[in-house]
Length: 504
Image (cartoon, rainbow, N blue to C red; front, side):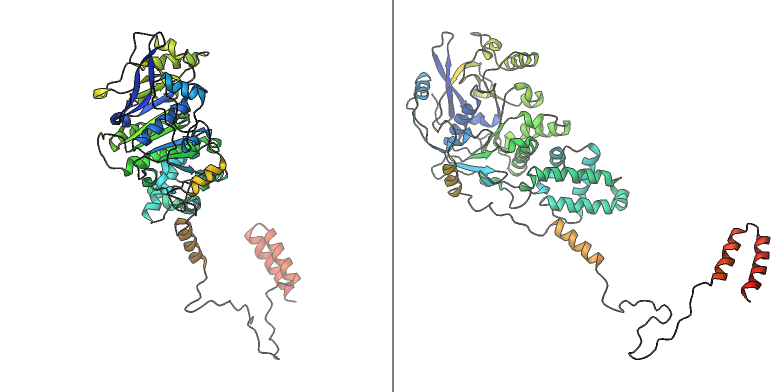
């Protein structure tokens, strides 16, 4: 059974389906990352829920995305339903106690939770380029823009700051090209159009201030439980690129801000990345390299990252190799790719002589999983066919009224609700443009030229007639004929003849 040093996941079964032993995740290896996979409807969300409950009770803050809204039930006390009570008895969870957990709701759109914002500068050129699906040349222009912003002290906080900076760069293209290389207006225009699309998809809500403080997702309650930060992601799934980029930004911020602590007795924070394939789909190599680097090194900051996805093939091998704690729910094997996924999942486990791992993966029932966690000295345990324990919190979503109440009572209520728009690149560049266009009104002043007595005369005086510059009809005809004659001698003769005519 679980104790203060571990999280109880469920109970493994013998070949005859009788109880074998409890399966737990050791807290001191909770920062060695993990993977939860399985087809739709096999119980991944419940597994995520009971793991979040376990970490919270151990005093470890959790951050997770709620794709379907079901995970919000972790904020409410569970109910003693028959099938839950039976599962608790099957896994020997005694006593089976119900409780609610300290939840902070977040939402990039500010509708189902506190708004989450980041500044453009914090996001950086690499993640922004990924978010907007820029070409290599356009990404180069984005890097130049950030370099110029740093050199000229231009704060990039929201989208209008970046748009103003890009417009300024397009105007200074020839000057910038001498230092950084060619910056074409076509590339700048393409980036501006991508920013417009991102703005229409709701990205403008994400960029700005006040930016999220990492400390606010690492809170603990007075009774020592870790906060469960739930990101409302049902609407966010309409823009999966924004979802993936935001979560990668959050991991990067954790990596850059938290100090090195080695291997603690328990993690400082656990991060669940649901629908993990969205991070890696069509991702450039530079981005995958960044994910691998963060996953590999963030462990020493005390942060555990758990990827939740349908197929283990969704995660690149370089990242998959970093995930020590694994829960594999059932997979279907109808297509060649699905059959390959089953083989891949089976081969990543330490084999159990009691059953065929690949065959078992396709036969698991709802709420069953193959479980392998890190044991003493960090070695993976032999894979076990396991019944996952029932949750202590509500199974299913909370109501809208319950959510509103919890948001109002949140420890961060009022801190992020109002947008702050301080002076940044947009205002500074706008001010410079206005100064450059303003007329110089001091000193000698400006005067208009006097075209032949054009100044205003005193009242009552007759203005003297000015000489006309217009040609007479005869003079115009003479010049027309001269222009039509080709040779210089002919022109001289014609001038002589017509000149005498014009003097008469």
